[in-house]
Length: 233
Image 1 (cartoon, rainbow, N blue to C red):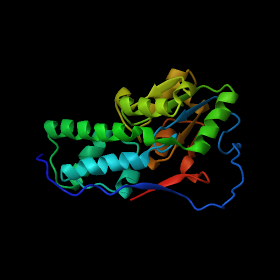
Image 2 (image 1 turned 30 degrees about the horizontal axis):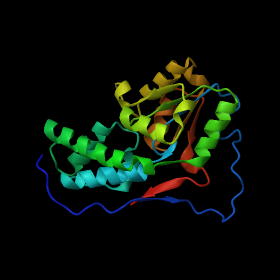
Image 3 (image 1 turned 180 degrees about the vertical axis):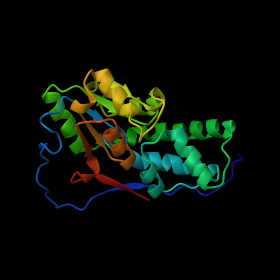
Image 4 (image 1 turned 120 degrees about the vertical axis):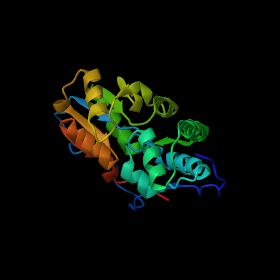
């Protein structure tokens, strides 16, 4: 698809929920970490990392150059799908044909934008408290992401989270993306724990469905955390 010139995408901000000026300390209770859990598996972007605003900026800035329209509502709707599927969906909605050349150019451009801003990514503090509590209990933990290994590893490394996880499953490691259970099943397998003994953590509807489809003990929606940073245009 030919490129077209357009205005630069406006910056995107993750806006925390309204909460008291002095909220009570977050407590990792049985709701957030069931006492019978034998392993924990976390999505990455939007769950461990407050990175969705930068991902959205990267998608929008790149898509503008190719005449493809993307907004926050669309990203939230489809969050968890493999990135190549996302491009196909957004391009089809915009009436744009995805040629092999366009696909390569698109992801080269998007990857450069994201990696140029990757050091701006921060952790989602309350989720990290769950991770630390799991580590203190000796629970094995993994990441199950629809993102590329390059971006996932960069994010986990730059935020000093990588050492908590025994296994990292990314989009290119499984044949089917979320809501298929493949990533969460692979993570449980690599941890050596039955899916029914694992708890999964997600921020996206498709990811929550993937956890349920995998037969996990529980699917925890991190967007219900008191200070979760919600994505807005």
